[in-house]
Image 1: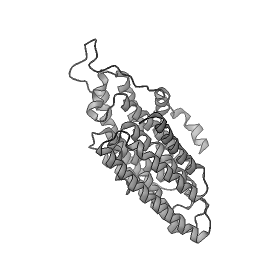
Image 2: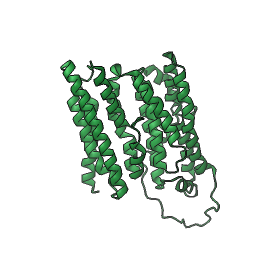
Image 3: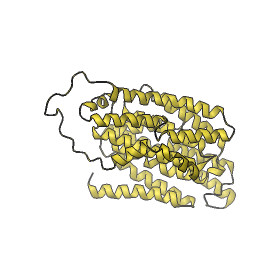
Image 4: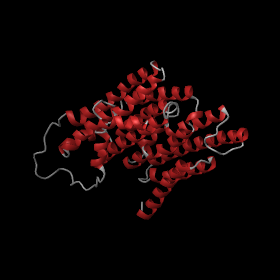
Length: 347
């Protein structure tokens, strides 16, 4: 894709998301979603092949259905309240339809089927945009309408998402599918807390985006798309294998790392609201995610290739890709735990 065209398309994607985030009028929000959806499709089809074509079509159909549902919910709300304002949702049916539409855009269970399929069919960089930037707009609307969301519905979706995100990734060897199931599970954690403490959801989303960006950037360094190609990495980038190890443990939510902050705070917030069983179930199902992250760390950093590379001349061409923001991303994705007291004050 030519640079000017790429710049225009990326600008449209960003503008669409910004319109959604800054608007308080339902029609403008809907227009922002549409701009964003139509502009992301050329990015998904950047490397043109039948897989990418199929993935883009699936993405388009799902997002178009969600947009239609959202518009229907907005129209019902307009008929009952006479207002286009986001904060005023007077009708429970409209609220349920809007929540369903937004969860479909995010890929929460039971509308999660498109996420692994679409992510697997596109390139690593497109997958990175799909699993990070594309989550911001729907989450910002859920944040705005959080007082009028049906808590039971969202909690059920959150629980099933965490479960699906854990079970789905268990026997995967494709890294993009693993990241897609990881995304579904993280979205589940965010959905669980949004009606109780929306600010906590913003914290979780920020940390999730940081960790996912770092992981995808490390995968693109060696163009790794399978566990096997990732296991070859130690021969060429020994330091990066240890970075992947730390990042995976952070994504799994282990204590000394940044990924532990949102899980800890969400469990704490839910128990404050007299919920014991749901956070317990979520913590148990999070172990499934941890299992497949550990499988990746095992194959990457803890297994040795049969023969070491003794040759002075590398068997691959010298690495040319730029990884500009990788060091700060890795640091923020792993070392933010000491800032927890400050973050809890923000909440």
